[in-house]
Length: 229
Image (cartoon, rainbow, N blue to C red; front, top):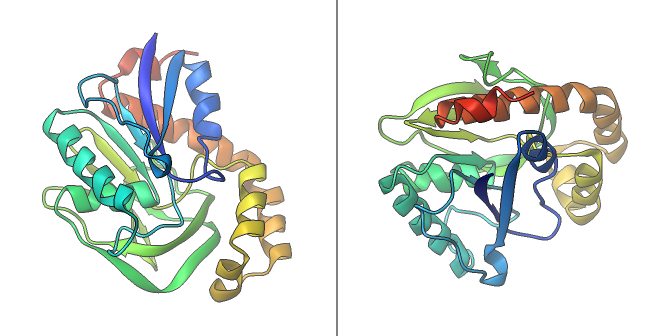
């Protein structure tokens, strides 16, 4: 069985739909909680890695596990380990590859669409966005999607990074709305608007997520995995 490592940074940000996709594709996900100082594997051990979102910021001044994760991503890149970065994971990957992470003037929270240059593998949405940080493209990276907030997806060799959250389920969105209610207020979106968007877009987003995960698997060279029914 193919094995992959998932780097999780907090209790309410689990793999979600990524786990569902992995089970369907016969992939075992080994979840590592870096916020609990759990040990990351050597980069040559898994078939690929996924770094999930976080309320912490890669823009500087955060907990020690952030720098440790960025250093691990540099080692993963050197070992040619494919990485899928999601939100914080995308920002950490951009930083590891030579880009810069910065704080946006306002949070981007809610259901969004993006302008995709590769709609077959990175659909335009709808996607759930929930972040305060943006990033500049690393050297040699190719922008795959953007919107008014900036870069929303990029690829670099076998890596894929997305600012939005293809992994979220309605339960995950609900937990974030409870735990990070201040983000909704600062983003100018109400809880009822968020819930209505989840009801309206959840099913389509799940289908788009499966396409995105398969696209990453194909980019990573796991063609047999991406083609399984």
